Length: 255
Image (tube, rainbow, N blue to C red):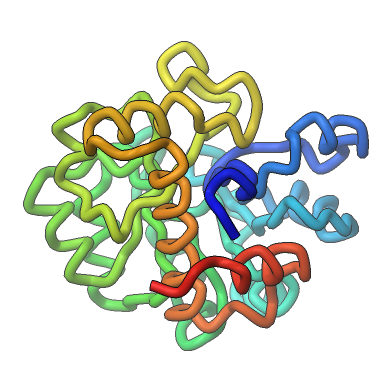
C-alpha cells in the first residue's frame, strides 16, 4: 500500500460514545484511538461497532469520580472487552494516592495481557515512570509526554512509545526516537496549538516533521504506521483489532 492510500492516523483523541454514523463519516476514514474518560463512557462505547475507531476503556486521572470507580473486577472485565485501555494515568490536578492506587490496578490487570495502554502523566511523569518500571507493559503509549530528557530516555529504555501532537516543542519531539513516535490530536483539547479541526486531523504535525526531516508527508505517515504495526506486534494485539485495521496494517510494505 502506498502512503497516499493510507488514511490519517490519530493515536489519542476524545470522541463522545454517542457519535452518529454521519459524524464518524466526517472523519474521512481516519483511524482513531477513541479515548473515554470514565468507565461509564466506556460502557456506552462498548456497545458500538466502528471499524475505524478503536475505543478505549478510560478512567482519566483528572476525573476523581472515574478514579474512584476503578477496581480489580472492573479492570479484569475491561481488559477482556477492550483492546485499548485509555485514557488512564496520573495528573497533578488531584490527590496522588487515589490515582496511584487506580493505576496499580490498571497495570496489574494489563500485566501479560494483549492490550494497548494510553497513559496520561501531566505533572507526574517521574511517578508514572516509577510505576511502569515496577510493572512494565509492552503496549504502553505515553500520551503528550512532557518529561525531562532523562525521563524520555528512560521511557524509551522501558519500551514505551510516545503519542505526540503539534503543540509539543521541537526540542521535545527531537528527543523521542522516530521509531517510537505515533501521532495524536488529543481532540478537542488545545485546538489552537495542535491545529486539529477534528479527530484524525494530524496534517500540521505531518507537515512539520516532513519539513524537519527533509522527507515527504507521505513518508512521515508511512513511518507512523510502521511504528504502530511494530507496537501491536510487540503487544500481541493484532488479532483483537477490528478487521479494517488488520487489513490496512497487513498491506503495509515490509521493513
